[in-house]
Length: 111
Length: 112
Image (cartoon, rainbow over all chains, first blue to last red; front, side):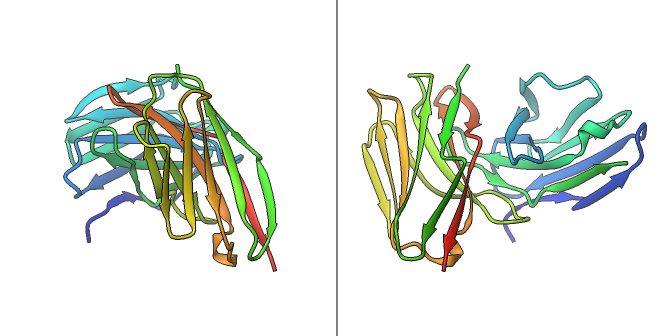
């Protein structure tokens, strides 16, 4: 299936832990993104990569570090997790200036 | 940077009636305006989009209008059905910048 797939779908972890979320797209898109959706459903961009290069880095704590080993993959590593990091994290990909295709989301719960 | 305002935040309409969601944007350089639908527990999905060289676009029961001068755009859903219940997001982006800025969403309830 052509898609944007991200894993895991659910992640429950304790404060202070380090965790990673993985994303892969097989659509041949050049650009990939991470968005955070909070409890009020607001979608806020975190990072954007184009052909493995970071092009957007919004005001996100240094504890969040994206990594793109190739243009089909964009992973998100989070250090020292805090309660406020609880949210749904969506990966997405696109061709330039076209709509996104979103992954199914990762619901992160920090306890 | 770009700012997208969306209203209303919640909208309830009787099944079969029309629903209208309105958005405004701040950056006159924005030229691409997609709309996304997010059902409960699912990913946002692109339902329709419009570019700045077009004033209106229609796809079955869904239509979008764009007023570049006023910097606002709207989503119109006619003959609403129960499956239209979802959160709808408007968004805007510029051709030289791939970043899409989303509005805060409208929760649409279709009443039986």
